[in-house]
Length: 248
Ligand code: UDP
Image (cartoon, rainbow, N blue to C red; front, top):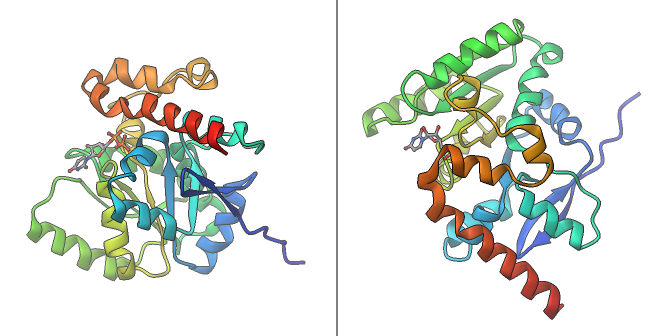
């Protein structure tokens, strides 16, 4: 008997969609299996604020097949709007998809693109150990010249990996995916920020108690203090949410 797949309903967060589903992995697995091209965006407050001026990014997010609530601010907004939703960190969804290689078979391959030299390669080795059935078709670091970029595009066309994880940071990764997804129309493409750094052991994630209390951003600030300017978007987002709540 075929499983009934519930289509995700988009909910607007300050004009950007967020799809509300209990289990994103369950929705994505048949798409991966059948080769239905998908772009997954992991939305957070910082990105939402960036979209106020970056209309290309905003349009890419509006066209993505799946936008997940990656940031605590997005989840708080949705909760205030009466939506029962849990945060879905992009790194955890990417991990679920990588683990599903166990069921999807060896013909199903993965490509890692992004991070400093050696990081994606190290992350691939870690995943190969964690899930021996995984088929990692290739890796590429994220600091390449135009010639290497050309080479990368040819490699992707040849390999047609089913899952392409892109860790170039926001908004570079979203723009890159939108520009290149036609090279592998049956693939699932996902921007994953610094996830390769975490898998390769270069960075660590915030302890669960901080994440549970919506304070993962504080840990990032401690680990990467130079992010403080980017993080000014967070109080700005909170202000917008408040105004939006009072005016509607
Ligand atoms: N990065 C890259 N190429 C670039 C710029 C950045 O591969 O030209 C990588 C960087 O090494 C890091 C990731 O992109 O692994 C950005 O991580 P971050 O956590 O800052 O992502 P964001 O918070 O923007 O999603």
